[in-house]
Amino acid sequence: REMFKILLEISKLLNTGLDTESLTYCIRLCERGVSPEGIAKVIIDMRNDVKAYKRQVAESKGAAAKES
Figure 1 (cartoon, rainbow, N blue to C red):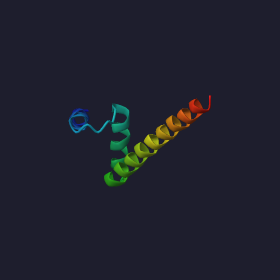
Figure 2: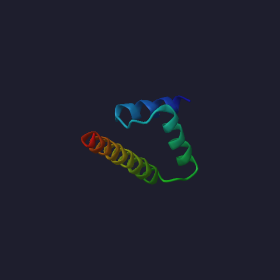
Figure 3: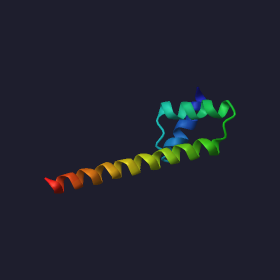
Figure 4: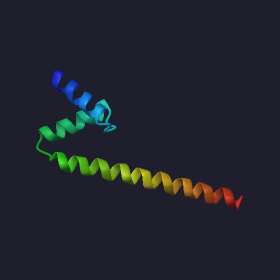
């Protein structure tokens, strides 16, 4: 438990954006042998996908507003 608190504090200091639940999942995956680099890549890819989706939604709303 103490180690988790330390890792959570490091995560916050590094501005990872991981909440307690997300960090818990990452730690569990590492404990089961998943590479930290692989986990990081998946998180980065997912964040990029969300940004692209939000941009696409905003653009489509802008286009719909112009048509009105």
